[in-house]
Amino acid sequence: MMTYRPHSRYVLMAGIAVICVALLGWRLAERPDLGSLLFLGVALGLLFFALRGIGSRVEVDALGLTLFRPLLPPLRIHYRQLVEVTEEGRVQRVLVVLYYPLAAAGLLDLDDMRSQALPALEDQTELLNLLQTKTPR
Image (tube, rainbow, N blue to C red; front, side):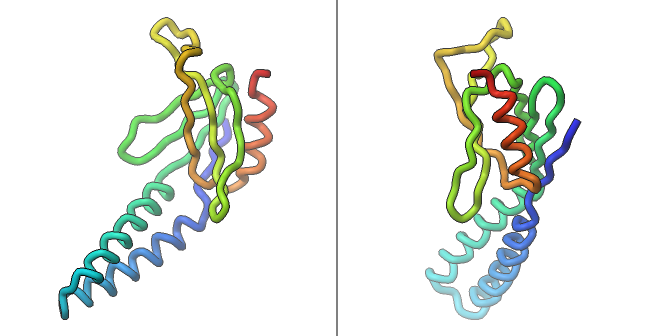
């Protein structure tokens, strides 16, 4: 089993967001205004996004991959469910997995294709190559 950890840029984003939240909170305590409140909301959103990325990981075994995300149940995707795996994004490249979910009987539900963006990962190219070779054609 291989575990792919989130990219270190999530730590940088979280650090920047914490600094912004502290400075904007200080500004709001001194002189409340709507602009500072708006940017505080944006900074809190960035902090949430970064912390969610830091807490995520992807585990790959012989049957498929499992995405672990904070506050959500693990998402299991078997190799046989894969349709396509690509690397997308301009600023932050992430893997996007297209797959068919499993129906109640354990068969593929070919009427419902889903997508899942994985967080930016260390050794992401290695995972991309592995998933592309395991994707059924």
